[in-house]
Length: 119
Image 1 (cartoon, one colour):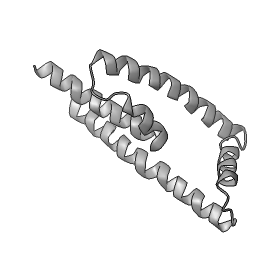
Image 2 (tube, one colour):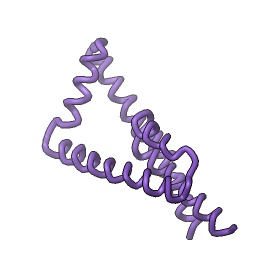
Image 3 (cartoon, rainbow, N blue to C red):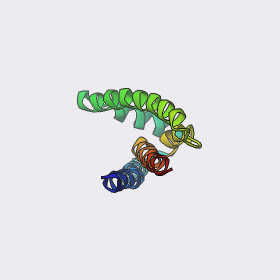
């Protein structure tokens, strides 16, 4: 069962790089097609898209609250299990994606638990 969890967490981490960044790539292509070159205008367009309508707002609000809970989980589990560099998952969330950082955290957490039960 632990191997299955590791597989799921690992695939989530990989998918958390590929899928969100593919969407960012598409967004960049769209801004180039619109002729946008001002970074502030591009950021404004991206921000407006997050809250473009009620369904996008629902997803944004839902993920924001999950992100807050996950950060509390990172702190609690990272310190409880004495995981090395657990705080870097915060940077990975904003630098890469939440799907990546959460999948990687869970993968490393599972490895830590497996290692500690074998000792």
